[in-house]
Length: 372
Image 1: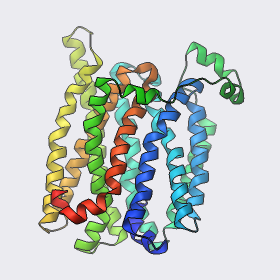
Image 2: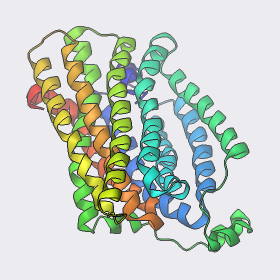
Image 3: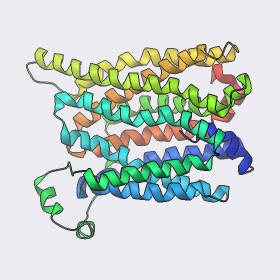
């Protein structure tokens, strides 16, 4: 997300077109969806901490190479590798939540995790926009490298392993090299879960809506610069709207999910099914749909720049509310392979986001923001 406000400068520097720059974003999104299918089952075999540290180390290396990339080919390749590395945290965090929290606490815990993942996207376009405007696009990646380095040091010094099973405790006594040599795991567990109707029907609708949301946010810089003459810094400010909406949706999703879970426990004398977590999910759909319509058609009508932001806020709120609720359900349903279950959800979401962000320029350009 931090790269999006700098799209205009990237176009000029690499002497390319909007579709090619969107392709770097799209592939980044895709590998963030695919790589967790590997990282998640790996974490269920060798532990969470080794995966966190490996991914963050690779992220720091690949990000600094993006910062010094001399041409589009190098930039393109290492953005993809950066996406693979950065996906580890998302892949393993769902499992970490399942490791640490009891069932009646998981909704709130999952909302806090989701909140942490969206604070970055909420503020990074703002920071990225002004960094690009005053220091240049390369400094976006330099700063990201510094932040990644701090997180890596913190992981090495303070992080503890959360996956504790009898066989895991025996494994922890062995070196990492020994554990890897003895490793037997299936990277296709997440994909196999998508063959289950309850998983597919949970992931698919949410993924399509997430894809259209990414179409909206990737087309926003071009839309607001052409219609309203916004600078990259000002465009970054607009992304605060989606960030605030995402934060509100994440918190509401977790709180309502846990409250409904408590109510169901009392009503059913402690016999609660994971599917009961899905009931509050439907409250997120009306604001999401209304937000899409408000944003698109008000831009189509060329009104003042602010009213479409109301639509963006509602869409962001509804989307993150449904994602938080659905992710909590998946964790509850597949506790022993919770990281793989979350990775299956990430895969379908990011696949749709990749396709629609890649096509966003053509869709909005040919159909207009209203019909898009």
